[in-house]
Amino acid sequence: MYGLAAIQQANGWAMAGTGACIVLSGLAILATLISLVPHLTGLFEPKAAPVPQETPEKDTTPSVNVPDKLPDDLNDACTIFMEISESLGDEFTLEDLHRRCKEVNVAHPHFSINRFRDAGVLISCGEGFFCWKPKSE
Amino acid sequence: MDLLIQFLTNTGYYLADYRHFLMWGIGCFFLYLAIAKNYEPLLLLPIGFGVLVGNVPFFKGFGLGIYENNSVLHYLYFGVTTGVYPSIVFLGLGAMTDFTSLLARPKLMLLGAAAQMGIFFTLLSALALGFLPKEAGSIAIIGGADGPTSIFLTAKLAPHLIGPIAIAAYSYMALIPIIQPPIMKLLTTEAERRIHMPDMRPVSQKELMIFPVIGLFLCCFLAPASIPLLGTFFFGNIMKVSGVVDRLANTARTAIIDTATIFLGVTVGASTQADVFLTGKSIGIFFLGAIAFSIATASGLIFAKILNLFSKEKINPLLGASGVSAVPGSAREVHMMGLKSDPTNYLLMHAMACNSSGVIGSAICAGILWSFLV
Image 1 (tube, chains in turn red, brown):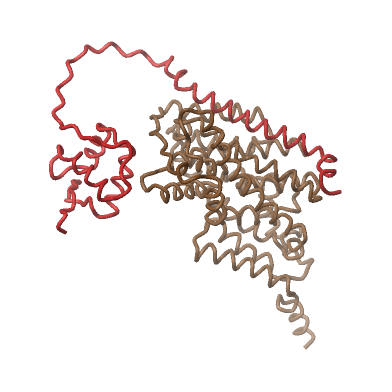
Image 2 (image 1 turned 180 degrees about the horizontal axis):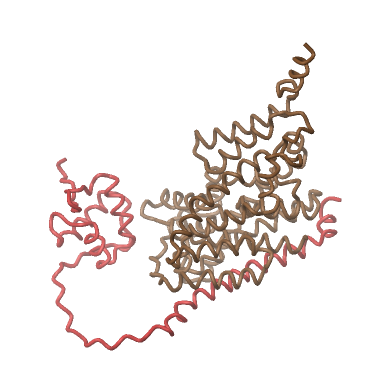
């Protein structure tokens, strides 16, 4: 038997429809449950003692205007990162650069840093420190 | 002289016919894909060589072939027919999988569910083409793009089709870089491919440890037939995230999964003996497998676009294509496609979330089909 008659004979429509509904609803419920987990674990966390408020230190690092979306061009993106890293000095660790990028809300800084490393724009200065490759080279 | 003639008539050269050479061609093609193209080498190399081993012509009755009782290959094949190897592979997969990205953005799990629609569409197509219901269910699971799950379900429902179904499933998994990108391009616009996903929230260790328990409770209670796959999968995962049995977790994700993969690959390859494999049904299975895989990819993409209609926070629809459970091939393709449209668009971690939910989704589908068709 072939065609629609074969599907009908094997109860195919019901199997496909029910199966699809079960897997969709099952994973939807699982997604809902796991989205509740952080709230549930929060209930059982011991509440931290109130910390006396300290007056925030004045931010001495210069503010940097970072666009919402980094430019596609490597050199343009690099210029922005150089501006961001100015406050770190000529040589800095990647960890400090990443932290500074996070402070000025750069999206996915680790990926951009990786691009600069791959392109040889961000070079190692030894002992875990890095610096920007001088433009003349 | 008679002894020499008798010996010569028992050699593979004398017993071979065109079908054996055709299968050797297929085996060599798999080896080529694995070695020269680096397509899924961990799977295609053992399967490819298994095809060569299984298609050495021999005198029937000597207890040599994989389908002959008491042969060595038959004993090794026992792990396939009973579903032991797939279960062990899932244990290792669980010990490898990092659910952080999925827990950080649970909504992506829906894309893993949507990509399973290819399975049910293929079920209907296979029935319409005249396959028996159990055979149709086994063929349909190719749409999950999960080799061990396909083998597991086929071993339970239609063991005579293990060879062609496993070969089809693994072939299409290896051909992800060829199959998925055109579908992704066809169903998404350039602007959609450029959608950036927001940074993920940090996920606590407690959440990571609670997830396998909740997952097991929900999925295996919903489809108990998926226990052999998801039970070991979540067990492997809790070994990994608990941090108290690092030695066991490390063994599961290295020695154990490697051993199971070797035996699974080589025996599945050897099960493709020419007289069993070269049939009209195999051609139908390959045809339906391609449809299953394509529809699974398309349904994930389309579902992501539908979600975007109702959601404030837009999802990059490419992520829907990684809802199939071919880990990590489809996630890698999605990431590459995103990078092509926008070199600053990094989708890999988000795609892995969909990918890992696809593994769970396809195992649930296998359980559902098994309980429907057994």
